[in-house]
Amino acid sequence: MDFDHPSALCDKLARGELDVALASSFEFLRNPVYQVVDDVSISSAGPVYSVVVAHSGDISEIREIELDPASETSAKLLRCLFAESNFAPLLSRMSTSVITAHRARLFIGDQAIRFRQKHAGEFHFWDLGEQWDKLVGLPFVYALWLIRPEVRDSKPLAERLRNLRDENLADIDTLIAEEKEFDRDFCRRYYRENLRFNFGKEEKQGLTEFHKRCRNLQLVPGGGLGFGPWDLELARCCV
Image 1 (cartoon, rainbow, N blue to C red):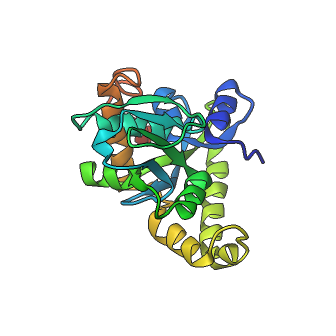
Image 2 (image 1 turned 90 degrees about the vertical axis):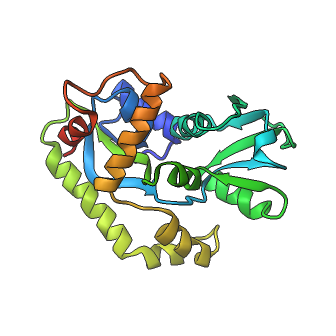
């Protein structure tokens, strides 16, 4: 098992060092050669809690946001959200700069949770999942199980991954009870309310909308996966 951060997993998958990985959804958008494990994703429908811009003051006054290089999906989502607004702050690589009225930071994953819980009364938190839901009204897909195209007989592998998801969800209370870092009540809310683990019709519609907006901003190549509508081509890639 490889537990590297999302961007590193994407790079290893693209280089062929991994045959399958739980990888950034944007990796699939920009390089749609992979097979996608159907019915499994990491998504949200509303606030996700763990993908946020931490800021001080009004968000419209932000001039620069320091990005977390570990996730391209969140950075591209941020660009899509800002494309609908009348302000466009500079997006830069994360550093150790402090958060001010004009400088904010994007946090993802456990780092976002730690920061929010430590600084709950100190900063405001602009939740990207919540903002996407307000804008589009569809789930946002952060990660997918991607299988390299040369892997033969991928359907049994995909089925094992779906079964693993089901087993973990059925045993979620035990997994939460073993949590050492975060409060168990928080974990129950986070895993049951903030996150979704399906990749069904609504999630696919959300991913299709994300692809359209990335394409319009020239963040991914134009066109679809093949010669048909993008959502139909997405369905063809699922196993």
